[in-house]
Length: 66
Image 1 (cartoon, rainbow, N blue to C red):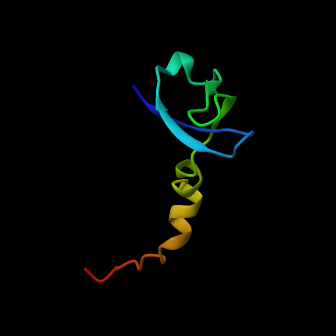
Image 2: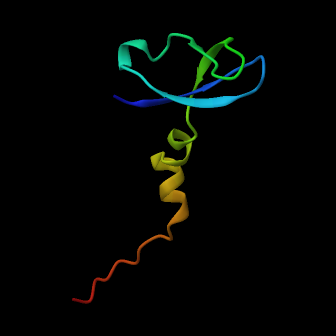
């Protein structure tokens, strides 16, 4: 089962829970204040995009004298 990150709007607590994918979007109770917390999208998706990866590497030289 995947690990999901949740953030409580009442106390600003962030926590992770292992849940089935079918329950990923359902609110989870905060372990600190017991308020309903919404799922937060991880920053991993932003950093691993093809656009960001290709921008960090220099262009390859083509060697034609083989």
